[in-house]
Image (cartoon, rainbow, N blue to C red; front, side, top):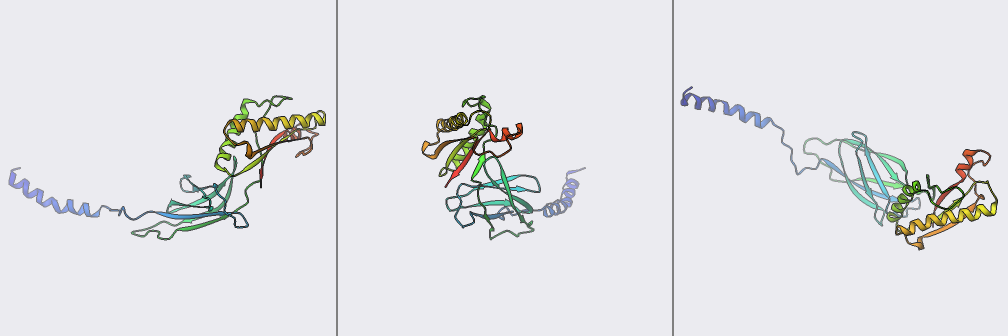
Length: 237
């Protein structure tokens, strides 16, 4: 092919290349394809709840987005559009499914100007058992396996830095009541000492032994006695 014929062939193809470029979709990067969400968390008396973690879990891809409430019980977050989200309230080692939030997909140059409003009212748990918080038999010495749940309690108390707790020691009905009362107090004290060593102020902690006086299950079975041997945390008002 001579130079003149090649040049003519090149000019002939230009419109086709140009047409292909024009058909390629161009997305305006200045147009957000997610949605603003304003979250408010209160108790049932409309008192704001601070430092509460709320999780939005995508039903499309299981991705999780979370925020933590301010002193006013509020936070804002942005979530991808075209998805439905299950809302969870994180507690200590558990979560409560609260509601669903549907954010319809956007098309063209549409975008969400106004924020979706999520108003959450709930009553946080006042007591919970420290599962896997175990002691040597007949002693107040913590087993090393207990450190995991106690470290999670430390993280909880660091997040909820205005919370004061009572650590309650409980036993089954095996042994003498007076000895069980002493043992339960010593075990509660061991947990408190661990928390203090991890930086939690002693002013926020109370240790109390209840012995066998507050069973939660039947002491006639091994399973029931195992449930009664427990360390319980109570949120103080």
